[in-house]
Picture: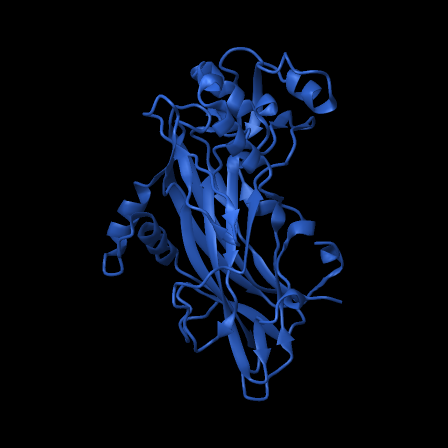
Length: 370
């Protein structure tokens, strides 16, 4: 998305910050046996208007009159529970919601984007000796709705407002814990030929530190904006979906903090998590290899985005005929579905990150091009 760095932010027109903290609780390998339970879930929303005459508003229902600058955390927890268990908890007390939510566990999972939609999530069936993939609900999902308002209010003569939507405060979007661990045996990369990346991997000491955020993914599905008085029916298809990863695509080493980023979804030869799996399940490479290699290749080629300014724009007003804003008095709203999960094919998704918190902090802002 070249040119984003040259955009002028109209303001931090509703900075929406969502904090999600997860703590892994069960010893495991890598992705297969690593589970996480929710320790804390917070949401803070703030509005910081600069020189703009209009600003974003947010809602968890999309109903007229519900758009504001704050969504109670309990409302999102209800959504997550409903999505996970397909059960309505609308009439349950906040105490019940908190209890149910706190008992959620997440196993590392994976997905693909097909025709702008997320495919069903899958995870490895640890009870099957062939390590079969099965469908799962090991992710958080909740919906948000964005709209635009003005300081003077919306009238029949209000027009000319078509906004982009960007992610800001990117350095805080995913925040993890620096945690130390060691290989199950010794460094497993000794057999790799010498290249800059391979040499980095081959020189990782037996005990080393990683950041727990790097095994995480955040996904967005964006739906076509509709009139503020209209309703999404539930059968709409997203017009765009994207996945952001917690770390870098390739392995790196932060010499100042002595922390390794083991890379994203990498081929088996360079994938620490998969190498460690082979220590636990020595027959892994003999179990239907073409099937697993194709899955790894799909994950490697999925197009996960690194969290940076170049990738910060999630809605560009010039790429769509529909708009988020107000034209000729017609105010619109836009639905976003947000997903969070531990990526099972990620190189950092191994036992060192267990029992370490990760927080998700989403900040949306509106802006127009220069």
